[in-house]
Each structure stands twice: as structure tokens, then as C-alpha cells.
Length: 339
Length: 249
Ligand SMILES: Nc1ncnc2c1ncn2[C@@H]1O[C@H](COP(=O)(O)OP(=O)(O)OP(=O)(O)O)[C@@H](O)[C@H]1O
Ligand SMILES: [Mg+2]
Image 1: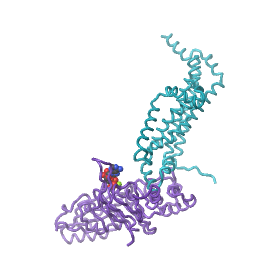
Image 2: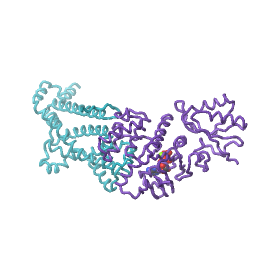
Image 3: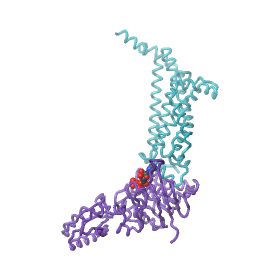
Image 4: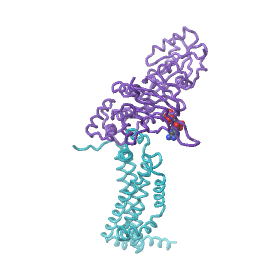
């Protein structure tokens, strides 16, 4: 394996000093490989934003090192850092577009900063807008766009300097489920076609499940668990991971004994209410919702739900098969923690 | 009762309307006063922006956590100077600045000489107006610019100023109107313009109609400046007015 594109070594971040210093990050170590889509998930206040902002030094680490493409960011001069930042671009929850510039000029902006000739910049900006599906909005102003379109412009802008890494801090948190899916698909496509490494920060499980290959779970400023998304989600070993994987704050201790617990993820398919209802009607099986963290917008659901299946093996199997047959729903069995 | 009323109307000049109207016949003097009323504050506004705009920018970007933090003592010094200058009443400031006017322009009387105190009084005001406008700037956008590798200078010139343009135009309108008012006040102590003739002829020599004319013209001037400023601000704001003026090629 080649050298990781991002290496974080013994990173700590303290805000303020003295008595009321806040320790936002504590001895973080992680490697992000070239070309992967890496997820960082955690509850609010876990330090996700602080961590991602340390990756381009918007926040200066108190201790530790951040290496991007083999370059230690903390050792760079201001000027070198500005150069380096063109290789690690960022998109935000609030889009952060320049409201007084057209979309085209917004995408031109980073090239203007790095002194790319105007005509060449314009041409590339047009190509990028086409790439994100907004070729017809070049002359529109951000105020005229929907949230999803604004994020597409922001993505085009972030790609203008041919970055190696694209950092996404809650990039889909302000969007509805359908738009979220479309933006995630765009990120996936760009990752595949351009080979850009994507770091996704989110508090939504569904986002990680949708596009990430590996994930780090952040809890109280440190990495609680890190590894393959499938592995971690099917068998979370730490409390922090379980809190995230099993929605609604249920802890495994609360799982019914004997019964069979499954976790299902809705990826923008049918709403979840009908699913539970039709389970009862079509299979005659009544399931128990142990916890849910789903958003239901415009009849489409996104999120995860924890279901307790009946003790009767037959009924449980029937329900499981029924759910497995649904579109846009993934099912995982939850290991029995009572054993 | 009626006698006091008549005295009141006399005081307002309403009892001698035909006589009052003859005072306006000196049209040239009035026109010249209008010109003086406009050009001194206009130049003072320009100079006030030459000093106040950079100062306002520094007040925003220089603070801790700003785009380009500056040493704390320097920031406190600048803030203190701005506050001090702003707390001195304009008429007193003007008298205090007389020696400076004499030094720069060789005189401390006349319309041109009022430009110096007007500038001194307006520059800190402009700095605060600029500061207020720039503080409205979305921090996220500045952060995005930093993440893209912008230098402090690029953030000021390519992000903050263009993004705050509508608000800066509103501030400039506000500044121009305030300076116009100061200018009229300056007429009282040696300046020229409408303020001066309103006081000397209207009040001093009982030519009330001149006073009214001066006031009406000032009101109109303020209205015109405000309308132009507001219209320009709205027209230039791409959040509300997305139509772009087409460049002819
Ligand atoms: N500039 C700052 N000054 C002081 N404390 C801060 C600062 N930024 C973040 N913190 C603190 O650091 C901790 C982590 O914050 P951070 O914004 O990284 O959390 P997060 O995981 O991104 O949360 P969210 O999901 O709500 O965005 C919090 O306790 C927060 O209060
Ligand atoms: Mg955050």
C-alpha cells in the first residue's frame, strides 16, 4: 500500500487556556488512504469539525502532526500553507458561496486566487459546472439556486484547483433526503472518476453507509473505533459506536431477550410507516420498534431503525424476508449481547 | 392672546410676505450657497473614506481571531482614537481643528477650510460604519476563502469588500448625509453654504424666507442622496436583484 494521503499523528486540540480550557481532541491517530471515501461520525460536540479543520489547518493543532501528501502542515510557512490548501479543499454545511458573484465566477474564484489566466479559468469553471450538472446555471447567482444546487456549485468550486482531498463537513445536513442522496452520488462519482480522496464528516449513519468505505467513530474528542464500515456497523464493539449504530439511544442491554433484533437502513426509498403497517397486513407479523432515527421528507425516508422481531422463528423469518425484498432498504442482524 | 399670536407669526416672518419674497431675488447668492453646501461635504466624504475605509477594515481584520490579527496595543490605540474623536461634539472639534486647517490650507475660515474639520470628524464615523458593514460578513464564507488559500489581502479585496458592497453603499449614503448636516453646522462658525446664509441672513437679518429656503433645499438634498444611495445599494445586491447588466461586446 502506498503512503496514506492524510496522516494524523497524536493530534490534540485545546481551546482556550487555564482552568476553562476545552479539550476538543485528544491524541487522535488516523490514516486516510489515497482514493478512499473516509467517514468521520460522532455525536454533536464530539470534535468532528475540529478534526476536519485541523486537516487543512483552519484550526492549529495544540499537539501532534498533520501530514497531507507527505507534507507536514504545521511546519509550513504561511505562504506554503496557502499553496498546500489548494490540494485539500473543503465544502460546508452552509455552502459558503460568494453571494455577489455568479455561479461561474464562484467556481473561477479559487483559480483567480492562484493566478490562473482568466480565459483558462472560465473554460475550466464551465467544464466543472457541466460536471456537477449545472451548466445552465453559470450566469445565475447563488440566491437563485436551491440548496442542492448551491452545494453542487460549492463542489465544482472545490474541484477547481484539482485537489487531492475533498473535505466535506456536514455537507448534506442542510438538505432533504432526495437531494442528500443525489449529492452523495455525485461525491461517489467524482471519487471514482477523478480519484479524489473524500473525507465525509456527518452525524448521520445513513450518509456513512451510503458512500464510505472506512469510518472513524469520534466520541468525546477521541477515536472510539475505526475500520471497515460493514464491520463496524454489523458489530460495534464500543458504547460510542453502539449509540450511533443503534438509533434512538437504545442500549443493547434494553434489547428483548430471546427475540431477534435487526437494524434496517432506509436509503431514500419508501417511507417507514407504510413498511411497518404492511408488515402487519401482508405477513401478519407485528414487529417492535426499539429505536429509530429516521427523517421522512416528501414520502422518502432516510435513516436507521432498530426492530425487534417476534420470538416465533417462523414469523421472524417471514418478516425478515419481507423486509429484505424491499427496495432501498438494507438489513443487518444485530448480535445478541445477552449471551 | 391675539397679540402674542401676531408676535409669533412676526417672528416666523409670516406678516411681511411680499417683503420677504424680495430677499430671494438675489438668486446667484443662493445658488452659490447650494454649490458650497455640496462640494465641501462631498470632498470631505471622499477624504473621510480615504482614511476611514482602511481604518474600518483594520478594526475588523486586526482583532483577535480576525483575518489578520494585529498586536493588541495597536488595536486598543486605534479604537481609543476613534472613540475619542467621535465623542467630541462637532462644533467644538471644528474649533479645535482650526490650527490644523490653517496649517493645511493657510486659512481657517471659508468653505474650503471646513473640509479639514469635516474630514477629521467624519473619518472615525466612516471607520465605524465600514466596521459595521464588514461585521455582517458571514464568517463561513471567510473561512471558505481561507480554506482555498486566500491571503488576508485577497480576503479583504476579493471577498469582504465585494460581498459587503450593498451594505457599504448604505453606509456611504448615511455618511454623506451626516457630513452634509455637519457642513451646514460648520456654516455657523465661518464656513459657507446654506447653513451660513440661513443663520446670517435668515436668523441674523430677519430674512426668514431665506432660512426656510435653505432648510427646504437641505431636505431635498438629503432626500436625493438617500434615494440614490438606496436604489444603488438594492440594484447592486445580487441576493435580491439577480439581473446582471449585460456587457456590450
Ligand atoms: N473556537 C472554539 N472555541 C472554544 N471551543 C470550541 C471551539 N470550537 C469548538 N469548540 C469545542 O470543541 C468541542 C468540539 O466541537 P466541534 O465543533 O468539533 O464538534 P462537532 O463534532 O463538529 O459537533 P457538531 O456535530 O455539533 O458540529 C465542543 O465542545 C466545542 O464546544
Ligand atoms: Mg461540526
